[in-house]
Length: 435
Image 1 (cartoon, helix red, strand yellow):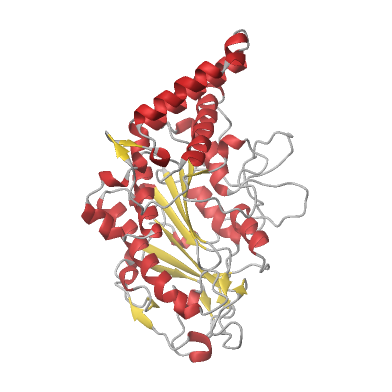
Image 2: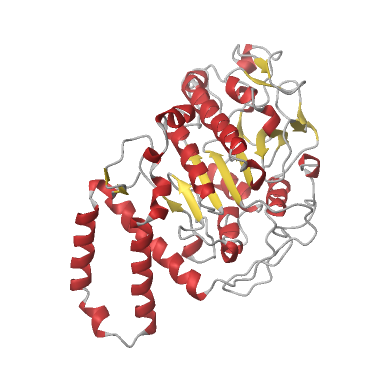
């Protein structure tokens, strides 16, 4: 899944994480004292990059007319009374495993600002770049995480909209694996070889690098350099050892790979399940291609089946392996898309950015399945019941992960900051909790 350049990045991040694990593993956490169940062990974020249309996913409007629904309808699910888009027949058979929020809304239609808002619960402009939820959970859960892989892994790219670790150390930024997990990997003796480099070749390169590092050999009295060298050795051990096999999808049966779909998204979902099995606290699947300004329905002919197969397989697989109860999944974009279709040139049936009403799906980790929260109007333009803001959603994710969202957030400037702003956000979607 990775090339030479990406392998170097992985080495650096694994080294930084190894140094952190030895020296700073007791960072202040903010455990939630009154959580009535075990907190979610891992979180999978399916980030539908660009903004999915709720009308073609989880809030279809079959009676709104072609100007809004493009002529597409809805289908029943395995939960009585819940219907979703005809583009998602496989997910329709697993509606008992997830819940839908149909009244998500906020006030910005710009990709960057909306992404920041959905990831941090805050609008930019106060001179502080807050960390995304993935970085915060990576930090606060690190003391309980015994694995050697970094605590925050992105499949396969970062979002790129803002610095996801914000004011936190780079050791809490996501490790982006890069490349396409659906492509065949170059394997030698079970080693996942970056860029086609076999294990012997990699060992030789490491040996040459050490021989050229005369500076490090000369300054043997510097504790920081000794720690850095030790971290590098630990990183090499991680990437050539059993932990790296989490990224080797060829260890799965062909039938399992087919079950998820031989697409980038499908194989990312499979990789996410493998990382959950390794105990990685936070995993993001950045699903691209959903910024469908032009020919929206033509794009959905490809995006819909890929998303449907990969997401449904992930839910079913985690459930079968008894991992869904301890793995929280949230699936959303930075916003939705305009309910009214633009059939004019140059859009030719496109949908544009729309923040006033969209859908989010939550599953596992303490969220119940088979429920719907909120309601949009007959055209999907505005919430008419229970509007839910980004901070409302994030509040519950933190809470079910065992973190008090109102707790203080450690930061290098020692500012008086909370993990989330607390006004109006406590338990707004608690009725989606299990039990």
